[in-house]
Image 1 (cartoon, helix red, strand yellow):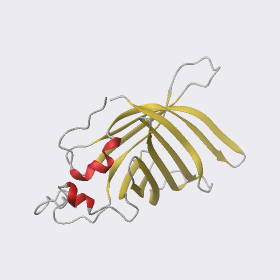
Image 2 (cartoon, rainbow, N blue to C red):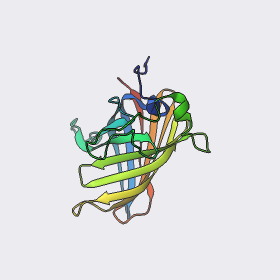
Image 3 (cartoon, helix red, strand yellow):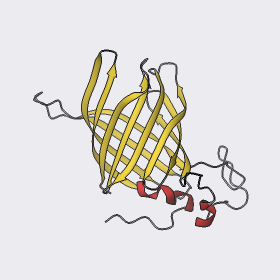
Image 4 (tube, one colour):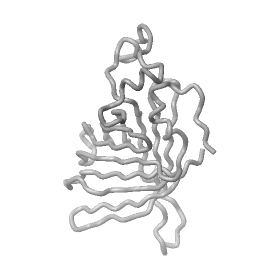
Length: 204
């Protein structure tokens, strides 16, 4: 049985069901013109915290061997890293920008204070920042409502040499102890469409 770490920052509590290391598999299914890429992949996902009011995120995927290929070798596919937090204005009680320390008390240290951030839909607005090693950074806006998270890109930034990638949505949900997720993307000149989905089990 998974037990939540003690002394969680109050702002992390609405996202605390994500904490831990998750592992499982997924299906990549993306059409590019008349060509469709369909592969099974493995996935290891980690959500952790370091005492600050956000979750640290790390994702690693690999392609499973093609059936009948005679090979059992897994091929590294993609990694991403980032941060998940409740959406709110940063104030004097928050550190930054850069290494500037906070001035004064942090404003959301109690459950009652965090409750004031609840939105009209009964959930909490969240910001998610993700970075890919191929020169892409994404900023997602969305909400967490119970064991469900809906996200859509607010901005996608690419380096000059990055592949074309313009928008995405992501969905996460806790169903019978498993983390289910789906990711739609607009990339390589294609409109927003189904890209990948997976089912993960908490392993740590």
